[in-house]
Length: 637
Image (cartoon, rainbow, N blue to C red; front, side):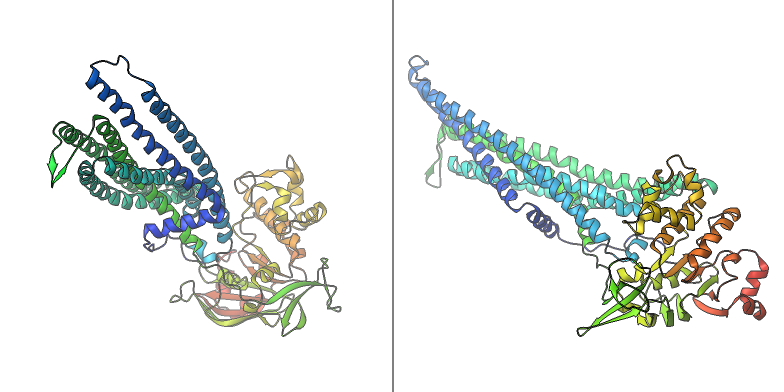
């Protein structure tokens, strides 16, 4: 059996800017032009907002100067003030339009980008080897599509636009502040440096806990998924209290990482605001002193009008506020980048290697080796070498030659396995759990590749056969049935999407599933949900057998296919199984003696080795392990 599922031992540390760069590269693939438009709109909005504030001086100074000279506003031309006011209002209206425009565009960009990421993530996952899924929980994988993608959504639609807006606002405001008063700007920059160091200290620590929070969230999703899926087992073994305890421990870890992430994150805003208020107060006092006394510093006389001072103070607020916003967004960006890293790590996983060049084709008959499009029930292996095409009839002859295999390279679980199954023979594997029975069938399918030795299929090394074509020639009925949301008919036709209703019904009859399907409210159109929870375990297994019957494979693998069926149901299924196995090469992982007795050969496995082989009668005569199993209990397991 494959190793127990577990999370990755450790994650490769990658610089956040590299991950962010990759996110932007992904956006450019989806919306290259739109992103430049967004940049232009953000720059335009920041520039217009900065210019609007400069109108404060043009409004205040004429009024102050006139009031100083005349002690009243009698005779004052208010048009000199109204023009800058209307100009300011117009700029702010334009800012609102630009902000709305880039937010709307960025929303579309983010949704399209996330769809692109989900599509490519799912497509790539379909190319990954079975080993990847054996070592990860379903909940952890699902967390990629929910928590991690949602964190990316918030970053793309809100955090990145806000971050860019803050950066450009800081640049434009800083330029205007220097123009108004280099001295006050120097003071503001000193406070800003304090603000940057303080927020960097907090965000660095919150980033660590946000990353841990995402991992803990993945753990809790995985635990909940496994627990609720196996709720019957939980209750049967009175494991409720232990499950609660385990959940509380995982939930406690999530609470701690969440607490510290948000504790450091929540302090960024207040710290930034307080430093901003202090900077505003200090610059206001210094600005007032410059306005009143016009001091000379380093031979330069400092002057500042009251209107310029007011504009500068507004700029001070507009300078510190984007820095505070930037600091707040950094936390969300760090959390999103943690999710993005997990997504990109999956996308960087190596796809299943398939270096085969032999394909499976339909032929007219074994006598007429002529390739054809229609399904005739006859197949051949097509080898193309140096421009020559050779068709080898598919007979179902499978042979193992000295095969060694381990799920981990340094832990071999199969040792020197040699066996053969001639076309049409039935080979059974028996032995204790963990002896290596399922592993052998996994190697036939090339779910895993052998470490040493060879497996030949009709004389062809299976490493030379394209995996898709290899698996197309193999029908497999698993002990654990998996049904999908859809109708009964759709589930039977899972391996043959263009199957007719007649073909589906015939396959169901062959597996003796037709009788219970006809009794269902909607018959073959009955909707299955929740992996077939509205069906009994035996009925689900019958559908799994019907699914294999429909594809009409030349080689059949039955992995304890009747283990979940009661004795009465098995008697019905066995007839269908006998019809299904007729004329095919069959590998059976045996659970009950009824599926073993009539095998051409029985392989008895122990600790990954074949310790006995022969037919039922010869093995009984040897009075070895098989004899002990046979005489000790009805069931072999």
